[in-house]
Amino acid sequence: MRYMLMINNDEAAMAAMPIEKARQMSAAYSAYTDALKKSGAWLAGERLRPTQATTSVRIADGKTNVIDGPYADTKEQLAGFYMIEAADIDTAIEWAARCPAASTGTVELRPIWEMADYLPKD
Amino acid sequence: MDSRPDIARAAAEAAARQSYGKLVAWLAARTRDVAAAEDALADAFAAALERWPKSGVPEKPEAWLLAVARRRRVDAVRRRLTREAARDHLKLIAEEMEARMTDEDLPDERLRLMFACAHPAIEPGVRAPLILQTILGFDAATIASAFLVSPATMGQRLVRAKTRIRETGIPLRVPERAELGERLDAVLEAIYAAFAEGWSDPAGTETRRRNLATEGIWLGRLVATLMPEEPEALGLLALMLFAEARRAARRSAEGEFVPLAEQDCDLWDRALIDEAEALLSHAAASGVVGRYQLEAAVQSAHAARRLTGRTDWVAIRSLYDALFSIVGSPVVAINRAVALAETQGAMAGLAALYVLGDDKRLNEYQPYWAARAGLLARLGQVPQATEAYDRAIGLERDPAVRRFLQGKRATLRN
Image 1: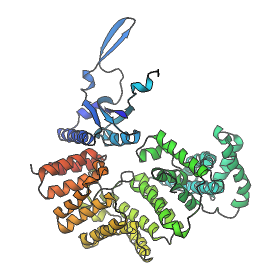
Image 2: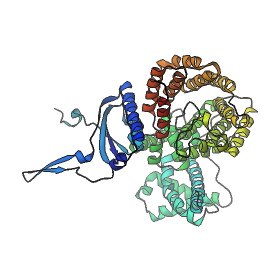
Image 3: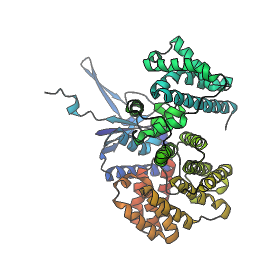
Image 4: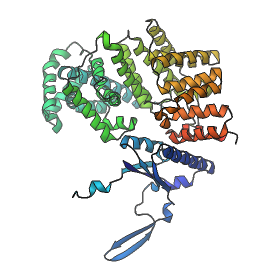
């Protein structure tokens, strides 16, 4: 099964991290990504720019609204994602727990909803 | 750190757990329906956890729980208590309560229930969770996060396992002598899984979930108390106590990981070590050696450093040799390789590790990569050591251990 690991971190806390810790953190991410790749679980993964670089788009009453910033104001913000292949949710949880973000923020796990599972069967 | 209310709460919780487990076991022994027994007592247990810390533990905790369970039933507060099976249990309570509870204690059926939970017909992965739930009253969500699975999955597994006990006709009894060894091992393994959560580092046991470790020790004490003549039960308790004794030394004041070799022996809990040593020598008197006694003996050799100032790696290596001939798991092999490196040099240790290289499971096993990295580093094979450290770092969940490994990696001479 495919799973999306959504990394949610407190941006302010992350930004305030001393440079040495930040280096260590990014090395931990590299090692984690590598471990994913070497075990064959890695499908994709990227880091996102902070929310100040976010633009939200909505169309209401035929009018397009383009807004600066994220839609919701929460303590943690989406900071990146991984897409992995895992036999089941237990295996995916195991990978999520190893993600460095699991000890700084929250790693949200969502199974990919495969098209074959939601399209009406002929 | 421990305030008075905390102590009261902990005492109440322990008493409630003990009584709850005894009652579930006692009821289930009569009907084999563990789920219904739990249903019948769930509210009473919750009420006890709420009330006992304030009012103190009642003189007859079991009688108190039974009385509440009955009253709740009469009040029909909870819909689920009208379930057929729970009603039968409460009828049983009503009938037997006065007869039983006036002047004598309930017979302790917890051991039988543990053997049912760790029965070969129950999936190995669910045995420890099942024991935690039935004997200690843990809820599925708490167990799920301890064992890193989703609460929904854990809930389903527990329900399925209880259904199996009922429908498959798994007996709630202590097995006969002939099969006791293997069956007791399954019980001990489940308890150890709760304690160690299936994970240890090459240097020694490193427990991250304190609460579960405490519960594991509690269960270990229970089995050792109920089966005082079983050397392996004593060995397991000794093993857990040795590990627990080192808790304060495992992290620096700043929260950094401290490997066993660098731990300050003065921070080890001497009372726990003494208790573990006494258990171990009592077990050894039986003349029957087993896995847990050997593992405890390894810990005992590590603990001896506080007296001798050195670690007897030769003894540790021969203990792992013996352990490997009994268990033969890759985990034991890794520890053996580490001991081998200490006695015969890093090259010998590395050779022993490479033999394991084909085992696919090791691809995702952090201690293997950490051990390999350490030995490669010692041999000055920087590129390979770097790669192995990276694997270990990427597979590690504990941020403190991760930082420690990163520090080790950083000191490699490039």
